[in-house]
Image 1 (spheres, rainbow, N blue to C red):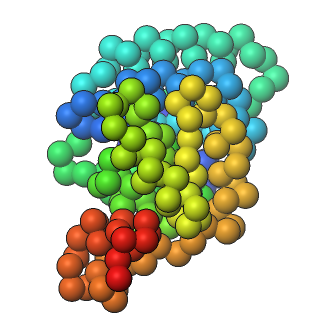
Image 2: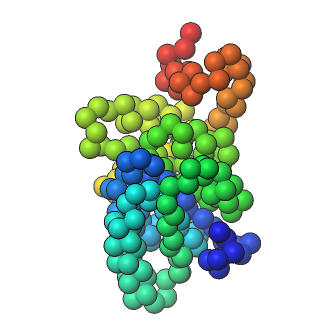
Length: 201
């Protein structure tokens, strides 16, 4: 992947994961706004990779608009934007590239994506889907942000969370490995979340 898009040792990647079966299309639109792209470039990001799932048409439309703006903004740092479909083999390669480039993950509030990013000790911005009827995603993001595991982003304005991500890198909490302590007994993401949110004895 990296070989095909002008990747070098100085490159810095922001990876956006939006979900597989029902992609969070508002997040795709949000990360490709001018304010989000400006925040990424201000933080030194050279590459943006969006996992769009089944929403390729939405990604392509937003990407075309973003690329047109970038071309017109002479004097600002360039940023390479690409997208990928859902990968049934997982996203380990992308997370590893983010880790190696000291980059950032912006994710929907799915437990699998959250856990994978935290295992790699990658700065993580989680964006709850406020269109859902319940607020469980919001509650989870707020609880984990209070514990310094991640930053909570707002789909209506992602730029503030992106700007905070570099400072967060040096103070983020070490996430417990899933095989440690009580997690060794349960090996469940639910156990980790219960402990984080204060539900475990």
